[in-house]
Amino acid sequence: MERENQGMISRSTEPEIFLSRFLRMALALVFVNLFFSDCRGKDVQIGQPQITDSAARANHPDKKILIVVSAHSQLGNTGKKTGYWLGEVTHFYHVVARHGFAVDFVSPGGAPSVMDPGSFDKGDPVNRSFLADKSLKEKLSSPLSPEKINPGDYIAIYYAGGHGTMWDFPDAKAISDVASRINENSGVVSAVCHGPAGLLNIKLADGKLLISGKKVTGFANIEETIVMKKSAVPYLLEDALKERGGVYSKSFLPFVAHVVTDGRLITGQNPFSAAGVGEALMEVLAKK
Image (cartoon, rainbow, N blue to C red; front, side, top):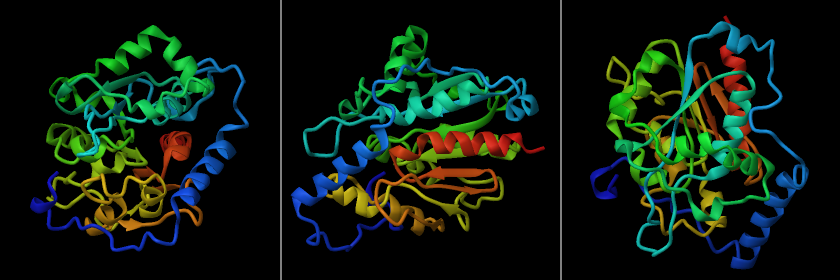
């Protein structure tokens, strides 16, 4: 989505001088260690143990969940690689698979998905278990084309994040149409971190934007500053969500999990919110 063609999207004027390069990196490392240190070294079998009495699954026994992943590999003009963020796929998948939901993957144009190399963390036991499953790894690497998706098969769609989504999610109309149909069929639309970039242009049957007037979250401007990619991205997601009419909120501290549910719309702020989005989705689906 080019900035010059999107008048609604503007770059924030938030000053960056209040954080030195060292402080930015130190904060990021502190929060990463804080949220992942409790699970390091533990054995995890992806999708296990099964929750046999899942009300969410009982309410929707014949439905699946669709995960959208990025196929964009270039981080603007930096010469660096990007793509989807692995943990935002695996931690969400782990939650919904435990409830017994089958999952399909889709990408813009059905192109092969691209993983951000910075997210290849095999020290994360959930990532490790997911990648050890050859079938899951293959499904993620070779996502479906949106034209082959029947929206009626799915009770929810989930846009996984990663900086690549900033480029290929907003204008992926075929996927936006699938998401709109799932919403119209009383399903749930969800996203995490940069994944809400995929929500920016979803329109409802009446022509209104899905997120207009809805409570939402997504990767915050301060978080983009901390990871030092503010000048690399084509727009700032927090600003874009607000400009599309979303009622945006974020956690008091950056990189703290924050999940917002507004009816059948669920969004998470950052990578540490992926499992929380999955759990919130299960709560919504458990309701009659």
